[in-house]
Length: 212
Image 1 (spheres, rainbow, N blue to C red):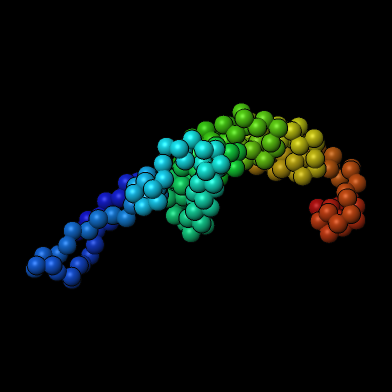
Image 2: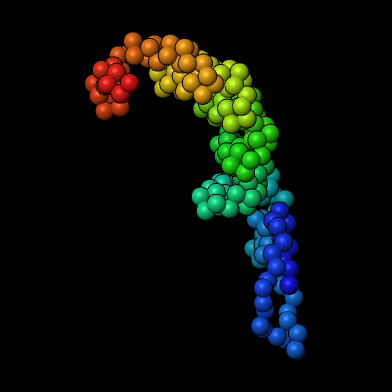
C-alpha cells in the first residue's frame, strides 16, 4: 500500500502481513501538525477554539510549542516537517525568531528565494537587528550574488555600531567575494582597536595578531 501525507513524498509499504477478514487493512497517514486542533479543543476539552484563537496569550503559547517542535524536527533532519511547524508558529504569533529559523530551514532545503523572503521580512520589521543582515549576506554568497552579499555585510556593521565581530563577518564576505584588498583593510581596522580582555583568549590585539 502507498501512504500519502500532505507535504511529504508518498511512501509505499513493502509488505503488510496483518489481515482482517482475509484482507489487509487500509493504512491512513498520521495527521499533520495541528490538523486536529479544533476537534481536540472542542470535542475533548469543551473549549471554544475561536475564543482561544483570538486570545493573544493562548496564541503565543501555541506558537511557542510549535516553534519548539519545529526546532526538534530541524535538529533531526526532518526539514519539511520543521518548515511546516515554523510556518504555523509564525502564523499564530509572528516573531523575528520564527521567521529567521524558517528562513534557515528553507536555505538548508535549497529553497533560497523563500529563505530570502523570510529574512527580508525580518529586516523590514526589525531593521536594527544585525544578525539578519549577516544571514542575508551568507545566503547571497551561496547564490554567488557577491555585490548583494557585500551590501548586507556592510549593513550588519552599521546596525551593530561598527562592532569588531561584525567587521570580521564583513572581512569574511569580502574574502569570499574575491575582494582581498577590502578584506585586508577591514582586518587591519580590527587589529588597530584594542580588544576587550578575554576576547579570543587574549588580553589585547596581540592575541588576534598572533593568529594571522
